[in-house]
Image (cartoon, rainbow, N blue to C red; front, side, top):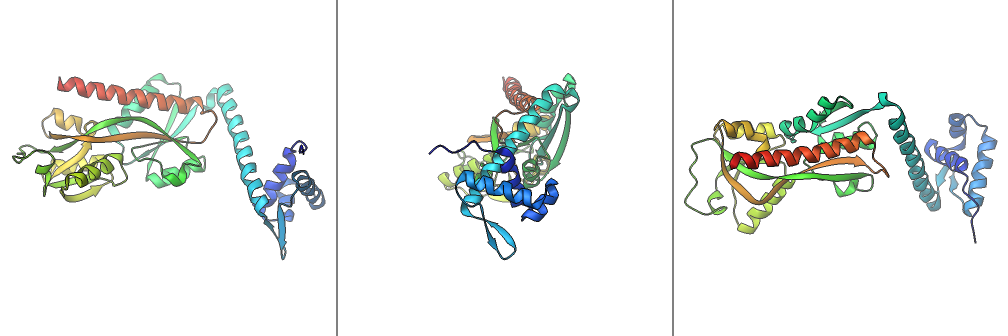
Length: 309
């Protein structure tokens, strides 16, 4: 049996009733009479062939079919908002502002390398907000940000709403203040009992490092777990232990011999991500950030390789 064409006005009215919790408040929000709204809801239920609400006392409660219909309605109208937003960004240059969230653990040097080309081009206005990862993800879900740059992977519980774009990865080093003498053992055996400062357990580098230590049966002496690359750098400069960091976060100190590359940790990488909302087509400003970030990582890796030659 072929269903009649879906009336999207009816779908909008249904979504508003579900959001407002009843016909009275929905009618007020839409500027329609209650009788008109009730009739439109009845038409939608007839076209779909099933009730979307049942009454509990004075409240309208979604049926199982109604809950499914609401999920589809949210997706449909979100996609409509996305369509309007995309065309607005094409035809109104003054709207070319991109709101970027960055996490504390993300190297400031890397953030600078990503933002510098945008600033020099002068075609996109960047608004940069640094905050806790969970706060930034919440803002992204509420469309208060356009993109989040992070070295933390996307949680599985967020994959229905958000996309994680891998920007690239960097090798990770154990760095320390000179002089530091490596015990006369192969890595990672010499790390047993050595004081270390490690990044957050959620970062890819930390997860890779922990897996490596577990396989080798090694237990370094973890002095602190730190959610900030700058603080890891300062702790390593104190001489109280070695820090696990991507080279870009300590490149100045390495060039000045204030820190030494003690060990390039095999099979351990720091990965960087751009996180966006699910979209059929990303706005050009967001695509520009992603491509710029990928190129910045490639360039940074090439420069660091050249310094070692």
